[in-house]
Length: 419
Image (tube, rainbow, N blue to C red; front, top):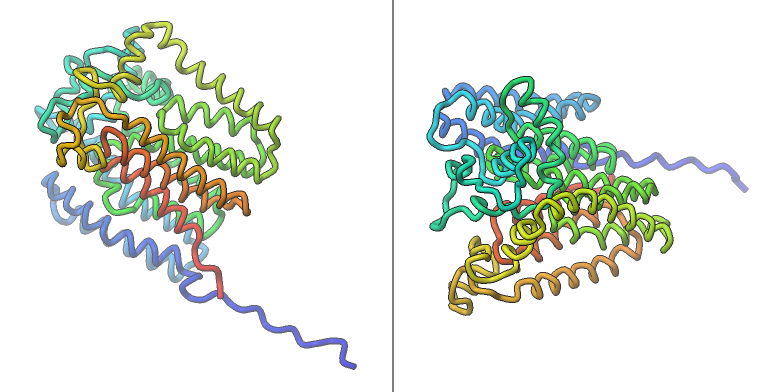
């Protein structure tokens, strides 16, 4: 009887699997490059400038194909050219080109102004952002920007960049919120690499940053990046069973943007599958509550009425103190169908948001308890953000982007396994 059998040769990865990151970069890089080209033309830059960028990206993609060892650096450089370079150009343009309009989006500009208010000892909630300069920010709606007199986000949004903002003002005399957003983008890049080592991480990062239209929004200031970075950091902490740190990061995420609360049940289920028991989760929740309270309480004490009016009543109320229905979500559909008669009328959107969240949480619980994988968590995060924000008072392109980039990053990380 023959005891030794010839070993079957290991199956080599398919060409698609070997170069999946390069192929995805081509697939998403082409439309992103076309958008960047239009941005350059709008800025009246010479045609050779975007052409040089396209040639550089093409050279980087060729490098990825012929030198696999250089993939990480080449991918990062290509995304920097297609995503970060237009943002850097937008920052430079605002500070060197005289213009009657602020060359920055109203969301990023308001965050920057809120930080300035704090540095000057002024409560950012209830402050007059119109007089501070926000009225000059781009605004395409038929009604005045709601941000002129209301700051709807919680304090983490302007507290996180505050040290860098203070240092920049001290050293250079100016600050641009998009500098911090680029820092958050770098953090997201490394977090995705830590969550998904190798090709899946590069694919997830390419999908997140180069989803068509992202660079167009980023030049105005994609202020969802900080909360995405915090949620990814919490997910990484849960993956490594550092559950107390996970709780702290989730508390910071909620303190930055309220809708980060939607991510908590999904990440907690993932943590439970990773071995967190009830006592551990309770301790993590306590840590997150402390972090949240530390960010919120100073402003509640400062002027609780203004804080509640800006961050609660304005979002869920009716009448003059309500955020006007706009965008292209369910609220806009109901307004067009005359189910809702006025843009500031009260409507139980909160109940619809709760129902949408419960549906995704239930699906996520049933899905993740069978064996949680981080790509599935990202997909579920994207779905819960998109579904809940779609049935809120307003649903904008930034909200669609937030959900789509997380879903696409999760799907990209589940690349085809080698044959």
